[in-house]
Length: 327
Ligand SMILES: CC(C)(COP(=O)(O)OP(=O)(O)OC[C@H]1O[C@@H](n2cnc3c(N)ncnc32)[C@H](O)[C@@H]1OP(=O)(O)O)[C@@H](O)C(=O)NCCC(=O)NCCS
Figure 1 (tube, protein in one colour):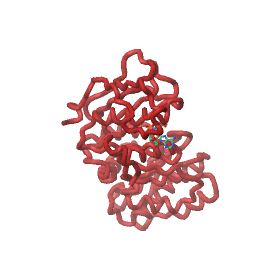
Figure 2 (tube, rainbow, N blue to C red; figure 1 turned 90 degrees about the vertical axis):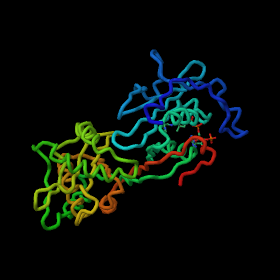
Figure 3 (spheres, rainbow, N blue to C red; figure 1 turned 180 degrees about the vertical axis):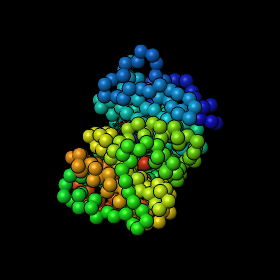
Figure 4 (cartoon, helix red, strand yellow; figure 1 turned 45 degrees about the vertical axis):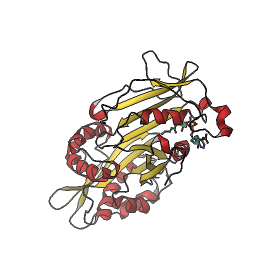
């Protein structure tokens, strides 16, 4: 079965209490229906707006849970832009939680996926329910990002930035007035090996991802490290005020075996941090996959004032829900 051929438009009349313990039976919803989004559906304000189903490389399906004629939950599963894996989102309105609706929604969208590809979910510490829910479904951790944040205008951050020196033969520079595209190849190279843990990577789709991602990147604060040949070996891409008032820095080396990788990466990030300090930018979160072995070292060295660790979790298929737990 391919992702496209797995599309189902049928509605699922739910058999109740499949996953319920006897004690929880009274709380379960008895007239729940899971179906595709229909024109004219009224989505409660506490749920995300449903995104339309799409085919092709950006394949996505959305299902809603309807109880007493009201939409009370929504779930979507979408193929990752460049890897053979899905990302899943489930949300239930607060008044209907803990009645099995989230679990039923997950089962409904999971049925639409190609079973060869893993279904992934993000779980940040700042959203503890996600983790509890994922643990109940059954999951394993694919990658972990400590996501520390710093306050660049503080003496501790400035002193850290000053201490990060590029090794001999390398220099760092902000991208500045040059086209942001100068970093595209290095980013694409890094993306390909960093994301292998999520599923097969489609190299041909990476440029499209770059076009999307780079729209939010600020070249005046983003930095690269170059070697003697002027080849870009590391980057620090700054997305100002990306989410929740946080500025994100995505920093990686272009290749996994980069010589002096930690030092090069630290100096590149420091170049961005220096610009952000001058601007008075607070709450700057360092993103980056710990599949790049240099990133954790740089993260550990930061004078962090907080963190929002995020795991990428591989969710187990629905029949495993009763097993639960996160390995
Ligand atoms: C996470 C969420 C979707 C769960 O929806 P739900 O309908 O309450 O989920 P279920 O009733 O199917 O819960 C299944 C299991 O998850 C775990 N769980 C769910 N909410 C929990 C909570 N608040 N505390 C602890 N465990 C929880 C429990 O083990 C639960 O089983 P139980 O009720 O028999 O103990 C819902 O809380 C929500 O919308 N949260 C905000 C958005 C979000 O974080 N979405 C997850 C993105 S993937």
